[in-house]
Image 1 (tube, rainbow, N blue to C red):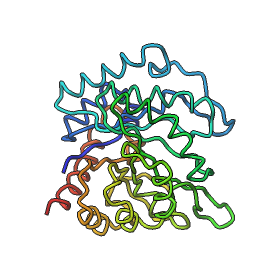
Image 2 (image 1 turned 60 degrees about the vertical axis):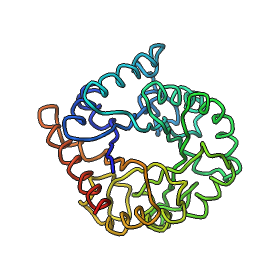
Image 3 (image 1 turned 30 degrees about the vertical axis):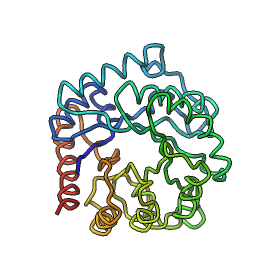
Length: 286
């Protein structure tokens, strides 16, 4: 079982190029191409901000090629990517094909593209129908992901697109294409008020589950913390993955863990993440 992790959290500290080197040095097998810098979204205004990141400019494919080369030089490959979100923003929607293109250029096989939280399976399917021919031309699969909304009065999450096993399967069925698969965010699945529980959702998705976002939380908030640090039952989760014969990567999305680290000690945090990923892989294999 191979391990991977998102690169955005380390990239905020040392940049994408150095982040990939450090993840390889720590022992990860692959890296998840986080593309949020392609279109920086301001949640307060609902608009995208001015942005000078290479992914937002004309040389975006060159940047993806550079990252691929650094990874391969260090014995690590891109396994998947994450497109910008929310897709309810028209400007971000305009970048989704670019995200797929960058995925292919970096060597990734799956591009995770969120559904619109508040759209039906049929409405979200229209977006994916628009993107799938382009993705197939790039030899990239699109993965949708389980989402959540928040209820301030109740103090916990509430339903959003793909949040439950039923909704997730309805989204997959609405598209009905082998190049459209599931990325299960384990933390979202465990949040009170929205998810059906990670183990239940794994079994419901079966062979259509081809990517993961792995992190830990208190089963209430979307904490995105390092596995084995909070309340999630990874024994039950790994058993469910084994039961369905999951053959994808174990990809971490514990992007909040490195926030307290600086450039001088960030490698220690990355080693912690690698150790957690290896523990999950050992659990799967034994």
